[in-house]
Image (tube, rainbow, N blue to C red; front, side):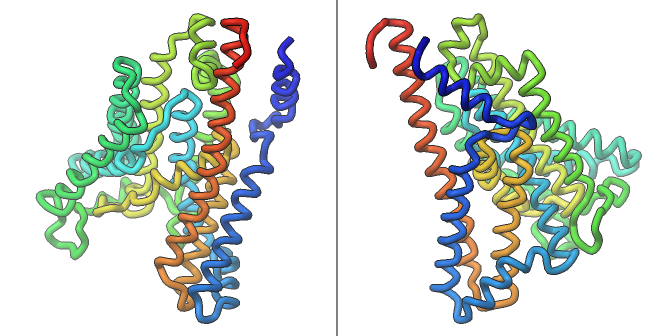
Length: 371
């Protein structure tokens, strides 16, 4: 028996029955380092750092309005985090989440504006399904290019997203703009198509509950279905997957398509639950922050929920410090960048280590030699 196998079994046994990753120490250290860097930014950039730090930590919890808005942001990040985690688990990297979320919100808006007389439930369901289909199509193209031509889906998904963003910007701010609004936005959707509010006057709505249910559903998909098992095997080691009769190309396409669907659904729910219109750049940050959330969670669906909450808390805290003190908007953006930097640095190191182990172990098993 290979000496690595007992260690792998111990790691698998350490994972909790609820699906949270066993190695919580590394992401906790990364988050702590990011918060320490955030405190450093506050001390350097604020004239009254004690007040700024106080508002940073207490602001998101100071009123139902701020707390509800933080949870509302958490719901969107749960969905995009699930999308990124799904792509990662299939062995792919979806870097086009920004464009997919924007496209999902745009498609949902166009459907609801085209059929204002539909019943509310029918319009919401149709808009969400159409948005998810659009996102799946956009991201599925990158999965197909990976499967058919071995094209790097990281590059292709980013390029397709980068091409979508200015096109939708033009439509929203040009021919489809609401002439009666000062915003660069389409007309507002009918009140019948708006999700119920949970904690007024905040923007928190039923989309947050749906995101929680989808995280539980993805956990079930990964752990209790043949599809989820084969998808995880493909993402873990495609050579081993082929040896077991699994076609990795199928899961490249399905993993990327599912990832795009989650991102687009996040955009659609942002429109029908928060903004009620598709305004220019409304999805900014959803895709990029979803990557950080998935990495904090170790791509475990249930762990995406607290990871999204942590990221939203940091964002809301920075916004509170900006609102109540002389803390600048640029410094707030640096705090988010610090969180992203420390998390992705941890992921890059871990991924390199896993890749080195997988190739060296395969070399020993396949060719009977040391790496």
